[in-house]
Image 1 (cartoon, rainbow, N blue to C red):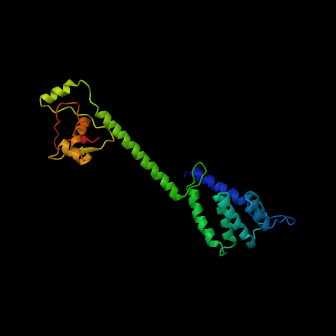
Image 2: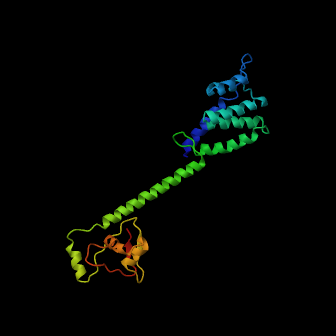
Length: 234
């Protein structure tokens, strides 16, 4: 996550903190039952407003903070609000019955904020790692396909290349093709032939011609290779 995203998350969290622990007027205190009724009916925003109207900053309001935290987490999908209210619960009731759940969520919520995406959606750390690995695998596949395409283009015979055929007849070494970037290569060892190399990479000696065409301009017969030669393996 970039620095701007972290700053934005902190700013949003600060706003959530500023809007909490309101002190209701003495003549209007909606009871908890009304808030619970709104939550059960799916009117979560209304439930939040009714719960917040009961906050007075005393230890007795810790339970209200916990209920607000659960609403923000499970119903409103707002980890910033949930983290704030779980934090207030722990401040007011550090050894309360919900202390462990509040501490566990705060640890998880911090990871969610750190791995927040620029679109505003929150993902777990494991999900972020999975997406990264998939992108790396996709990039590797694209590079391999590009290398294979380059090798096929390099192996395309040049029609009417009489010079290469004449050189082969005279016993001269056939002209070599340049090895494209990214293509896998093989350094010829003593005693190896194009057929044995094809067997090694393709499990099929008959595919020696593919290796020859990828490395030499069109010529008659089999091109000669010697130890130390570097060959492209298409």
